Structures are given as structure tokens and as C-alpha cells.
Length: 280
Image 1 (cartoon, rainbow, N blue to C red):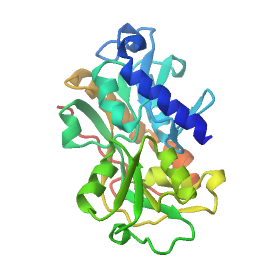
Image 2: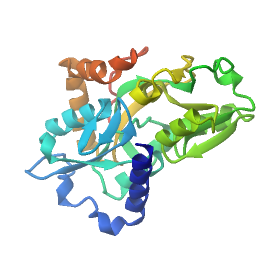
Image 3: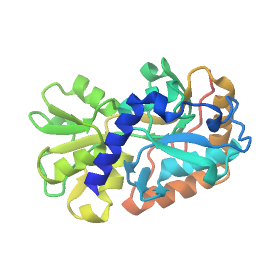
Image 4: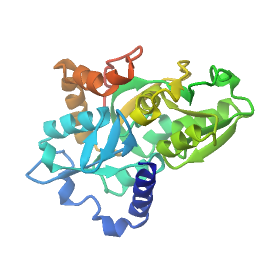
């Protein structure tokens, strides 16, 4: 499994490098207003995050996948008209700005720095940064107990940047994907993994890690998940915001949360379901 996901990450890297070979944004992703017009839409998701964005064979599952599918339908695209594109954390802005995807729904935290490059609709979920450790580890109880520990996160993620700023004494290891971090944690190559509690809960609940991993349960940030899109495309942003609002109000949001995160025993924290912000 891990080898397959690492291979997928390599393919994604090639995707970002060979822009011309990817077909750009073109008419295949629909118009700027988000009208389906019988075409297809390319949406960036994570391929290696159980419960959020996971690709297994030709099947895609997770909360982000359900949100993306719901939003696409509201924009006029049936589920079979969606082309999911792997979107590693460090490549999300590039995929949007170069038109390789129309939207990114990939545990994409809304930050001021990112808003300089892309626009966001949302948030559609509020998470918090936490720690994943081996089940028998009693030494790590929160971020204040990370001094001298080997901590893994993903290059380009807000989690990695926050750790660098707040915990200068930690030995931060940055990998390309969270699945690589999980493998390193299980093999004792690192002592902990940090990212959003939603992502960590998804990994801890996987059958192959049952009884081996645990979420510390001491969140130390607030992460507002948004849907990334081309900077300045206010018309599309407003349509996506309307879709998120509808998903929350008609019960589809709660159903998606229960289906994808419920098996891990995860319950949404304060602020959920959120109220999407106005587009600017």
C-alpha cells in the first residue's frame, strides 16, 4: 500500500513539472462561472488520507471527496464528469494557478499567505492540529513534550510551518505525503506525526494500524478547511459557497462527516458545522 501511494506522489510531482503535458485548465474544466455545459471538471484532492481523500484502485472515498462531489453537482457536473487529480500539499497553489484543476478540496487550510495566491470558498470544516504517536508511547502528551523528538510532517503544510515557529527544539522531518510519515512512525523512524486531527484519526482507524497508533488528543491550532480556486474568480467562489451552505443545511454535510470520520470515533470540534465566509 505504501509503495503504491509513494508511486502516486511521484506521478503527482511529474504532473506539476510537466505542465504542458497536463492539458491545462482548458474547456474540459468548465467555464469560469462553474457551468457544467456537458464537460468535465478537474478537482484536486489528496489520494492518501483515509476518511478524507483516499484513492484505492479507481475508487475515491472520504469527506473531501463527498464535499467535492456535492459541490460539483451544484455546479452542473454529475459524479461521472469529475476527474480527481492528486494534489500534494506543496503543489496545490500551482495546480490552481496553472489551470490544471478548477477546484482543490484537499484538507486545504485557509491562511492569509495562501489567499495571496488563490481564492477560497468556505470553510466547510474546522479541524485542529494534533499529534499521532505509537500506541505504547506515554512520553509525548502534547506539543510541549516534543523537545528533542523526531517529528514528521509534510512539506508545504501549515502544520510543518507552525511547528518550525512554535517548537524550535524539535527535530522536524518533512516528507512528501502523510502516508510516508505514518510508515516512518510505525517503523520507529520518527517519534510522532503532526497534522490535523481529522487526518490523524483516519490513519489511526485503518485496519493495518489497529492498536498500533493513537491520537494524543491535545489540539493546538484551528484549521479552517476551504475550497481553493483561481484567485479573483468571485463568480465561481460565490457558487461554491452557495453549494457548501446548501450541503450543511440539507443534512448532507452531517451524513458525510458521520460516514467518513465516525468509524474512527472522531467527533467534530467547536465551530462545526461552520458558516462559510463571504467571497472577496
